[in-house]
Length: 420
Ligand SMILES: Cc1cc2nc3c(=O)[nH]c(=O)nc-3n(C[C@H](O)[C@H](O)[C@H](O)COP(=O)(O)OP(=O)(O)OC[C@H]3O[C@@H](n4cnc5c(N)ncnc54)[C@H](O)[C@@H]3O)c2cc1C
Image 1 (cartoon, rainbow, N blue to C red):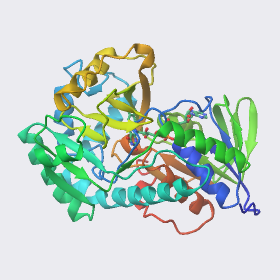
Image 2 (tube, helix red, strand yellow):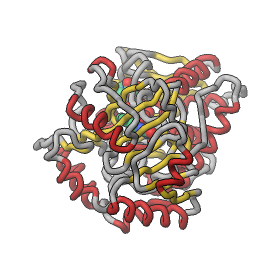
Image 3 (tube, helix red, strand yellow):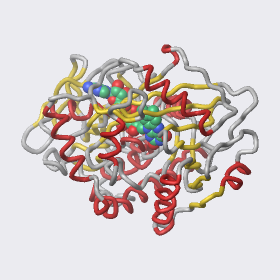
């Protein structure tokens, strides 16, 4: 590795965004320090569905989502919930979300999201070739399974858009999709197979990234929450964390769903809403799945990994709290046999349910780029439902920006201060 004197970089947050930033900065010769408020054994980057999703070119703020979301709010097992609150933060985020939930926004932003995801997928391939990595990266695509005529219509339309964006997508009949999953009976009308997508085992990826950056010289401070900043009109001078002061030449702010409160301490406004989701692992005895899938009507993600199947879902927008709503987990469990009648999955015990907070921006786009005001601060986050997928692209672009190089991706639409 090339430890030239590029300077020092301080990264806030050890989720996929922070770890991938460390990975590329170290490769480019930076001296890296990483701070995290936790112990790096759990955050949103661990229990997610592990899908790499160029297919998700439609941002969360897509047409129809508002009306659907309001309907779902009245069903305790539904996959979507907004915690009613008079919080000005939620109201302001909600107005911005509604403003962007339209076809023109999707059309304008889909190519940049696609490109960032494709870049990231390619970078995952490169990373997986390294001897320090074995995180079950596979490119079998994702099956978007549907059961209703309404969903067939919507998905076929979306698949046409995907094709027009150059993505590798195939529409499959009921028989066609069953052929791809010979071990498990399917009860669906068909599927769209996003062959451009991939999947991996997040726990292995995260552990290997941490080991790699330590090996390459990164200094990691666990249980060191950032509580303040020293800055002038133009630059960050220091980060205050765990009662210490940390100086650096460049600062990288990640922090997942906590990004707004961290940014606020530096005088920046970055709107984000935590979108809580749940997942659990299931050990199949005989019905081994070959492909990951999304059970579209139920909004449930299904991913084979580590000889198990991970089921995940729900989006509870609102507060950062540690409560587990078993009704919503029950909603996930009940959806499974509707698509896979052979899979008899019992409700997991509460202790076996994982939850994490997706960092959801109001326009569904990530935040990636330099702060306009604090010229030595780079921000990476807001990946929402595709934050794992975007990890290496975040890291690569962060390092290119730190090096004052042209970035591999067009990040004009991802400006971190676009709402100020
Ligand atoms: C059920 C579920 C399924 C998902 N499936 C997928 C999927 O299939 N594909 C996909 O691409 N994405 C998926 N996601 C989304 C993805 O997991 C997230 O977008 C991504 O992990 C966010 O990464 P991050 O690094 O931005 O944040 P995180 O992983 O949350 O990391 C943030 C870190 O910042 C630290 N931190 C917080 N405050 C401070 C502070 N004050 N000082 C220092 N450190 C601090 C935290 O401790 C944490 O370690 C899913 C999410 C959920 C919930």
